[in-house]
Amino acid sequence: MDNQLLADYIAQRTRKYESDLSSIELEDKHIPANAIRDTTSWDKPRTLDTLPSFLEKFSGNSTKLWSASKKNGAPHTIIVTAAGLRAADIARGVRKFQTKDATVAKLFAKHIKLQDSIKFLKSTRTGIAVGTPQRLKVLVDDGALQIDRLERIVVDASHIDQKKRGILDMKETQIPLVVWLGQQEFRERYAAKSGGIQLLFY
Image (tube, rainbow, N blue to C red; front, side):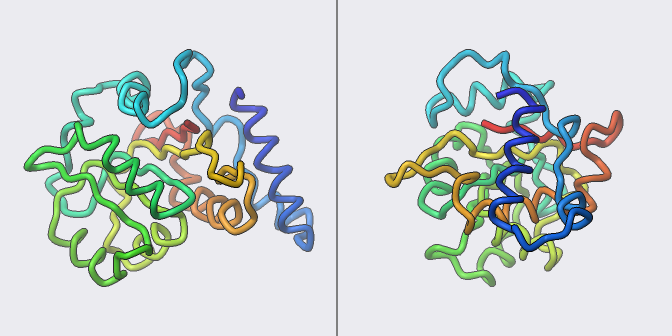
């Protein structure tokens, strides 16, 4: 799906799941096509095994994937997925990018207490963070998850669960995802030439 089709699909899902919203409220939630990086040139399967290669291809300077800001809890990459178990799988899948100075953080509610995540982020240099939209939003609001060094958000959109549903196909995950992606701090940086955030759908 190219970026325009993706933007239209997300908007269509938002209208379906939040049918009580006014046209102005829907517009406020809209993720524009120019905010989404076109990844149609990726010709390999979108699986856990190929995710590291995908990140390397679309990261610009791929060597930075192994690095982390000296500022604790300030990742360059955040991967958003529907559920804790899937987030744990992804964290294992991208562990090749973990070094002693750049941790892969697991940020989801299942089996991990919020206070433990806050403590971890405030004391650890983090290169890549993987989590669910709700937990990520809480951690940003708390200030433990810093987004000023963020370069890309990757949405785990192609994964389908046992019930044949993806993150955009379930009301309970699509709505929090759109809230997460639509934060003002992100909107101001999507597609910006300097200090911008890439939004990629995998």
